[in-house]
Image 1: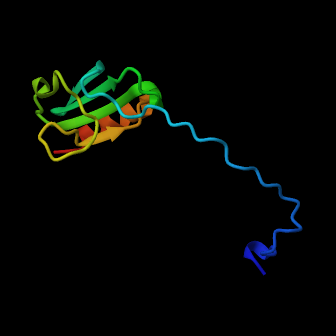
Image 2 (image 1 turned 120 degrees about the vertical axis):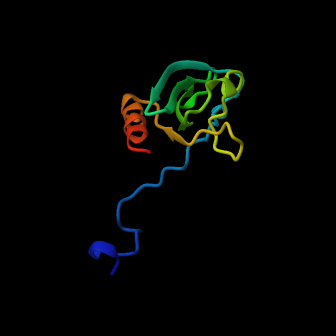
Image 3 (image 1 turned 135 degrees about the vertical axis):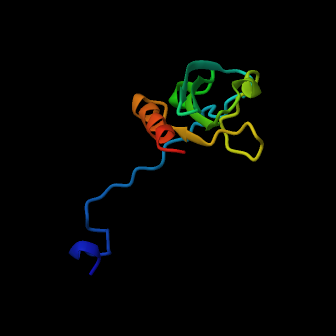
Length: 113
């Protein structure tokens, strides 16, 4: 007997099989030199940026990035890479680019030392 009392044999279930649709890859990797800062917030010393990358399809190219306390915006004035890496200009956190994501970033900043 299968899970929830159902038979593990699916031949008689009346189910139909839908083949996978063709997967279409969209441009989801932002060009770190092509960006627009939509909103900039300094909260408890932490820099929070809402950045839009033209041409990126997921979330219409929007990203919410948080940088370490007292981060100097001049370090990323020409290049903002939203990915995490070991260099000193990496964001410390990313949030879903919505009003709720921005609120979470602000809450986090206010709860960090």
